Image (cartoon, rainbow, N blue to C red):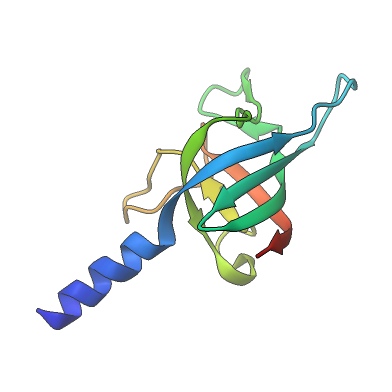
Length: 115
C-alpha cells in the first residue's frame, strides 16, 4: 500500500498546472519557436514553445496555442530525458498515461527558471 501511495504521489508531482503569464509574438511569417513564460508553484519558467508541429494529417501544421491567462497541465522532464523537451503541456496522453509529443500538446524548451 505504501508503494502504491508513493507512485501516486510521484505521478501527481510530475503532472501539474502551469499558468501562462507571458508570450512574445513575432511579426515574421515563419516562426519556429514562440517565447513564453509559465508560472507554477512560485517559479517562473522562461521557455520556447515549438511552433511547427506535425499532426496525423500531413497537410496540417499545429502551432503553439499557449496564450497569456491560460492554465494548462504540464509534465516537467529533468535534463530533457524524454524526447528532448523540458516541458510538455496539454491533454493528449500515450499508452503509459504520460503527455506525448505528438499533435496538440505543447512542446517546450526551458531556457531558465526563476525562484
